[in-house]
Image (tube, rainbow, N blue to C red; front, side):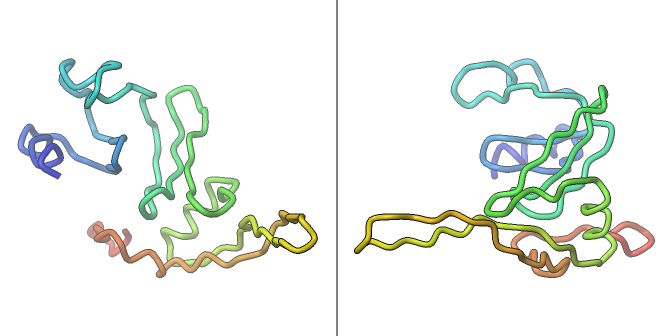
Length: 134
């Protein structure tokens, strides 16, 4: 958190931050980027990004490659899913379900349908624009 505060103090806008990643509006000082402990690895310049919650994001880089993350669920497959979540529309997705039978010694892994409620992400403070969109 202290590093986040130092970044803000240097005039960066932070769009997303997690334990080992940060999305900001301009390049970090070279001292913060590299392969060393405590340094960030540069991944891409982002054209558009949607940051719904911790570990649930979707970005399109300058070469139109998709970078996405979704812990615990199969990733929503397209940009429209994230736009819907931003516009207060819930979406359907899938998650992996493991069914274990210890007595018979097997595990079945299957997909399970789930509904991602746009308003279920409460770990992070939502920041709204002048039109009331977050």
